[in-house]
Image (tube, rainbow, N blue to C red; front, side, top):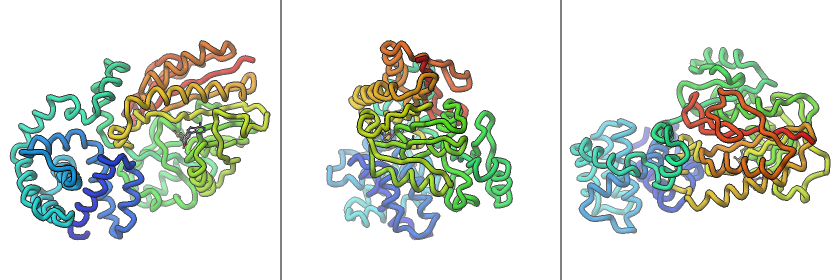
Length: 435
Ligand SMILES: C[S@@+](CC[C@H](N)C(=O)[O-])C[C@H]1O[C@@H](n2cnc3c(N)ncnc32)[C@H](O)[C@@H]1O
């Protein structure tokens, strides 16, 4: 493993871009990891960035509380370095001496030699005063939950009884779940192969294709990856294939398909003729790559699902999946930067898009056909409210009841809350067409 200071400086630069410039964690992590040769350094960088993004609203408030006066705007990377330092001490439990020494040196590498002493003093004060400081941070809901105020309020309004549990679950790391490719192998066979390789995994109940790994790891190095035996996919997303009730010969539209996780699952389940559509042409190669590795085939094309006149061949679909663009408030565990980048003002436009997608695609469904609406949002405005408006306006649509195991009843559908069954927050509704 390399000397710690350059890695801390690297993490601070990346964190400043994520927390202060709105760059996505995933994009920044990929860019920041690309030049790092040692896998242990890459793993530590990922842990520092994930935990710093997850806890930014708490640990940045801690820095503000410990500083005599706020840092000037040009010291933004130093501000991020303090957060990276707190996270290593309070979350990653790294040895205090090594963390302080590496961060002090990192301040110099960030071109702030005059602030090296300040970093030293603040990190040492953090260690000394941590209990009192954390008690103080717990008094303000934003720094207590490390969630923005608008999201705390929205969750409390929609899920008053569950709000505390949701906020806590959002701040926990999610397990890594795989989906076994039935076309290539069986779950028991993959489990045995993992066991032989010393990889601990479990087959959860109620998710016939899933394996949950005991430790997070680089899945491309696991046995079977290059042969297409599995993909990464949370259990909540894997349930969608069950709701589609697929069988050979059906015509299926996946209207918001990229990067192709649910499309691939559908194709693993049955010989369906599937059109994988996505508005974002830049995301289509990911669908192609995934399908190729898994040995699956579909028509993949760019198009706005809300404008079928531009891409539809006029033949009705037996199944339509709308895995709608949404606030991603159900997957904060996996994408903690949602808490930093999403705004309350995004919700109404998202809901309008979701309604437009439903209205535009309903006429493409054959009578007797089924449409599955899914989001990784927790919020009523994107879920229950969208469905209620749609059902009011379409008398040939009926919402099919979902099994209790799909989470809590929520309007016409059901809501899995984050962490429930170890899974992500997800909303599901099934609409059947009578004529
Ligand atoms: C939740 S993601 C889909 C994830 C995908 N179903 C999977 O399982 O891998 C939503 C997708 O909707 C796409 N999208 C957003 N608006 C769209 C539109 N009007 N028409 C088609 N696709 C759209 C986005 O580009 C994004 O790829």
